[in-house]
Length: 330
Image 1: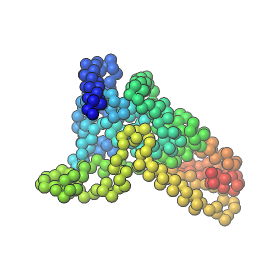
Image 2: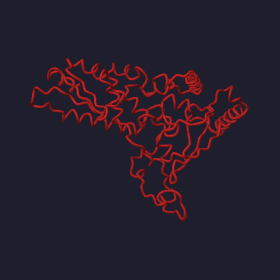
Image 3: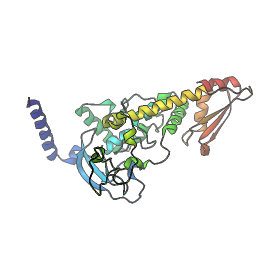
Image 4: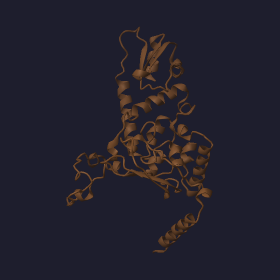
């Protein structure tokens, strides 16, 4: 009954021994001076002290040894450390700690859904590789592309030229994708996720430590984890990276669908038939007048398009009411 375990242990020891004897430069293992992390994980203090240890752990996705960074984002925060290597993070444009998108602060599954992608089905997503050999090969390809100066992070986030066009059908699709992403994006840093863990002894009503550093013994009684759904507490790191079965992303997407359905249901055309102007919200600097024209011209002849980036909105005016109603119903 112990033979399979013995074989597994033997393989693990052999792998560890081979890596201890391996040449990091020849193997292409990551060695870097600074991690790829989001503002939330860095914390509010602009002066932080990081501990760096080369080849200190294996990447949670690729299994390759990489440089691990560890720091404390605040005096009342728990220590954070990188869990995936830099190449893997850049391949998806995510933080090396929380694996959320660096530009929008949302899960990969939610971002890819807005861009119209299939989960783990693009070149920078390791092409859905799951075996160790395939993951190793794809990681080497990503590292080579980064070394050649290619911006794989922009491709992953859909910011590269044509990134969202291919999946949404033209420039209008890109405007729609950015509208959805801007709506779901976190508008300001969320440092609460760096708080210390909940005291397990307190949960059993057995904590007797006078200087317990964990919540709520340390005086911080804000514990939303206790009231969250059970699936929110057991998130799989690989599912979050590949963008599948992520409960946080599914909740965000469901909320977005409900908001769209409610908006369409309440969008009754005005009684004045001369009104042919549509309001478009969620506009950022990447959405231009030309993008909006390319999207809305399919519904009818346009009279004018006015983009107001300061207000994050735009006004599209058609020549007739029929074109405006067709665009609103699309």
